[in-house]
Amino acid sequence: MRGLNNFEVLLSNKFPAVGSLVEADSYWLCARYQGQVSVGGNITVSCGARCLPGRYVIVRSSNTTSERLCIAEVAVYASMQLDPRLYYY
Image: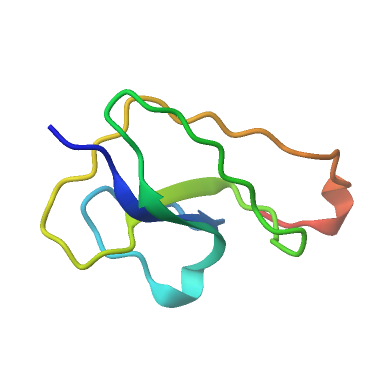
């Protein structure tokens, strides 16, 4: 068993179907993690200040690999209170 290497965190307002390709125009990049996370390790990844809010969080490998992505737990927190009148879901 190995830890996760090099991954991206994406945000979307379109439901990402399990096992399907994510359409390039349906998400935006929140953050990119370059490096390795050890088995059982924890990391924190933050979106940039200009990142738009999204309803769905997508975590995917940024490597072109056939390895499976295995995540035990993902927690998502908003950094500030957003005015819901400004965003449409």
